[in-house]
Length: 224
Length: 252
Figure (cartoon, rainbow over the protein chains, first blue to last red):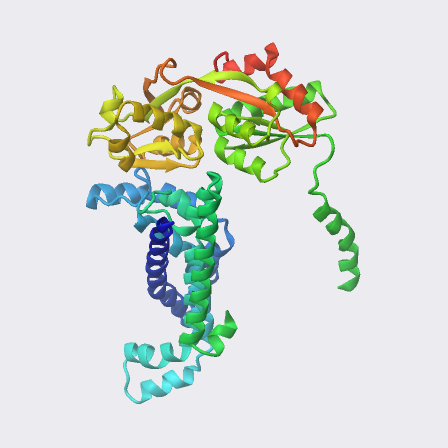
């Protein structure tokens, strides 16, 4: 049963990196769409939200075609840097990040839109530059909403299955996350292992929710 | 909107309830490698038995066995290896008296089409030239079980296992090779024939070494037992055997 801790550690690593990636990309995209008006904004918003509504297998297929050895991005990465993303944990991170991106992006956009522009204006009048205004006024005011999005994204990344399986496969110790390990144990009729993995997963998710409630008491937990 | 909602309610409830299988349905759980062949056989069988609707469920034989063991309403089980069927028989899931082998196949090692390196022997797979080898997961995929047994016998499993990219079924292993994501893979001759432009057969494992025979049997708890017996008999008719041969399957 010790084998269950390896997929658990891997799952946390993959979900952690995916969430970190989304902290930068999701918050950036959310801020951009909340504050800038430009042609095609609605189309971009729909495009960035797409991973939330599309089946993970469709996303997995897109990623496989794009990042594969014979794909445009994968071929370039391999010939230029010797990087191979398919069947690696980094590939699993990308799959999890893409799938959970809209949760951060949507929450961040709504949170930024709720920030009163007069407060930012006041900071500017007092002589702050754009970056400090963002980091010290806008982001702290929007933080609860952003945090809620990040927690949801972490949870979603932890449970990612379809796209991950297609892109990263199921290599024990390297790309086999908890959800994939459960699937495999059930397919092979290893009910004992499946039961144990399911309990570990449930306990971990429970712990994540409790920690989330502790980190930001009140509103964030309520939003979950 | 209350009026239109109540008008919608009846067809909506009807739709939600329509999932239940009807008495004339014949559910067949078949090994992934049989996909194309069985999809062609189903309408032939339905033409001979207009009152029966064939429902096909494909997957790794080990996974299909687990579904049946957990109570899936399946009528016919067609496995790609004897081990899965033996296990089904041991768990009293199938009717042993009606168990028969209906086709044979061969295990092959394939490489992506146009690949510069092709293994000539099993030993070549152990060399560094082959960094990733697609093999069905031996715990549930017969093609992987055959490959593992073969490599075990040759004393090569320990050197090939670290490079193994496990596949959930044999067609996934085929897919990995076809996309060039792995350097080689173990599939059946019939799978390789299904993607002629994308994969090349490096060598065929002699059937004397690894005999691949597909057994079929009616599921003991199947809801449509008569149709199950008729379908199994149909597999041995000349018209069905012609279709199976067309897809590359050999005589049992």
